[in-house]
Image 1 (cartoon, rainbow, N blue to C red):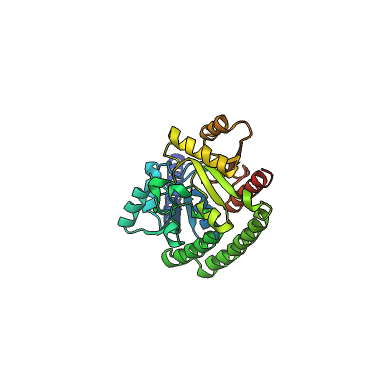
Image 2 (cartoon, rainbow, N blue to C red; image 1 turned 60 degrees about the horizontal axis):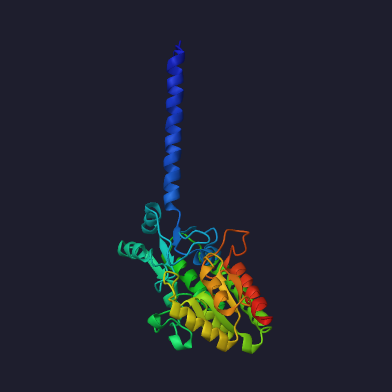
Length: 319
């Protein structure tokens, strides 16, 4: 006849069994989590594009927060470690993520596959100062390619190729099906932008911005870049009083009274132009270098481009 274990012993045995099951389950979960494919993206604009391509096939981690400045945002130690654990790192490059590129380089040196999107889509160079570009950066590559939706179409296709080549465990057919679907949406965006900008008289297709960010859009949709409050391709530069005088003179000559300022940047510099040119100067907000939080106006790349197109069309067609 079998003896029953004392109550205390039975309790300890039961708890030990639960602990064993929990530990085994946690270990399995950690292995499964570790085995799941990982794509890390630096900027939130590229993050949205990459997520559209990847879908549920892998985990996509975006390092840049909504409304951040790609020229100045930095990484925590945890985020830096994310780069070296990735199967693929997607970054803008061409000097855009100025505080992050060294971490991307470190990940590449440790054996992580990296993809510099800006270099792969046919980058433009900044124009000379006389043509409305930053003189000290003339001839340097312009990183702001996403303002041209046709280049984003090319970028999306290349990202799909990189994912299927370097990220094990994803379904190639699904990745390319996602890319085809998104390509259709981007093509529709380009057509809609063309029709919208057609409302702006040719003589009014002139852009003044906080800094030089719309060179690709200007080339694609036939705009003139009159100048920028910050005469540089980066927000980290500062204008001098002579820069502001030159810009206000160029605006007078071009008959431009509208300045487009990024919604995530202080508008103080743009407001200075009102002092020089009078109260007739309008400052119109755009989403030029960062997405917003969902539901805040530019939660996706497609939403950002449509919002900007509407603001530019309204701001210039009736100027």
